[in-house]
Amino acid sequence: MNKIVIKGSVPLEGIINIDGAKNSIVALIPASILSKSIVRIYNYPKISDVYVLIDILQELSVSTKITNEYIEINSSNIKNTPLTTTKMGSLRASYYFMGALLGLFKNTTLRLPGGCYLGPRPIDLHLKGFETLNCRYDINNELIYLQADKLIGKEIHFPFPSVGATINTMLAAVLAEGETTIYNAAKEPEIVDVANFLTQMGAKISGAGTSIIKIIGVKELHGTDYVVIPDRIEAGTYLILGALLGNPLEIHRVNYLHLYAILTTLNKCGVKTYINDDKIIVYNSNKLLPTDIVTDVYPGFPTDLQQIITTLLTQSHGISTVTETIYSDRFQNCQELIKMGANIVINDNKVIIKGRTPLKGSEVVAKDLRGGASLAIAGLIAEGTTIINEAQHILRGYSNIIEKLQNVKANIHMST
Ligand code: EPZ
Image (cartoon, rainbow, N blue to C red):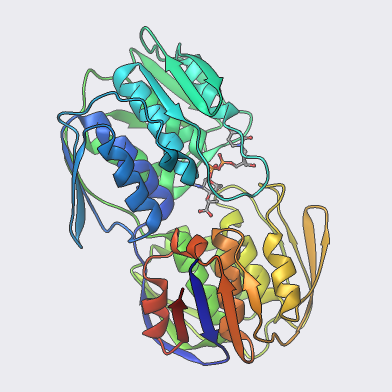
């Protein structure tokens, strides 16, 4: 399996360019089939989830072309083939094919999604959205069957602003009859990105980015060219790295409006950042301050940066806490950080971090995408050499991470 080898404690200096948002592109690729035409998506991240989703498109007789600048998806001759390929189980976002195929064909059969283990990850809210639109479903041994004579727009009230369920309901509703209103919709920037993409394809959507989204069904959609928004989690990851080792680091091609929570948190920890349009310069802070973090839905502190900020807080002078409110088991990286010398106590959905503890290079295991990223940052600040096993988790969400870090002087490489 992939290993990442890091020789730590090297000050990092230079420019890191942020790529398109993983949690947008993984929805845009399935959504593109709703056009039954040609779509080009620019600024896509070169991450393994993208290539898996493109492979899955082939099962539907959708033709694709990939260049360095764009992904072209031609769904003019799409077939409603049951998506039973095991590739569907290799990532969570394959569930967006449910909404897209249901929206387009009104019935479909798919293998259930997989993805990082962060605790139970049910899809009951997705199914609530589909059922409200007049869809029946059946699940047996890993396959789900969705069936609707026709999809009829309705009011949908989510008990929790689920990102995936909000997007999947939009995908099913854009070609439904009548108006759909989603109440307690998720407000993440990726929701707005998908809504803008669908609107460019001819959908009628308003309110994306607020907790009430209205969709007026249309007869058909058409092709478009689209540019993915910058990845706020990738940007946050490198900002945290810069706060630890930046000499300085310049993070380019960001949308700082999506980074309010992480920028204010770094500021509270005594980190200086300088925003200039789509660039942020970050210097390492020689005296990081402790803080208390509670993850929340957007615009709160993102759960996807929870594991990564924990690495920074091991270097803060004092006691910090991180409370995880979105997932029930997203602290698996802590055991590995403790192995490296961190002082962390896990107490139900909260970790208590006593800093500052020097970290020493160790052999560790990445258990999930963002946990793996937290270990990579720990390895970059540790004394000595760190080997990260199961590093393929990290490559699912960070475009060209090895090259990007080598370009700012990190001593890091892949090995098998
Ligand atoms: C998306 O996951 C992201 N993944 C996650 O990013 C991110 O952590 C999450 O949103 C929250 O921001 C993608 O976009 C592919 P949710 P999703 O539905 O859609 C529960 C990363 O590291 N829930 O908002 O699965 C669920 O179990 C990944 O990039 C239900 O109970 O998130 C979780 O506890 C990790 N029933 C909470 O809601 C449902 O039907 C948040 O889930 C759906 C979700």
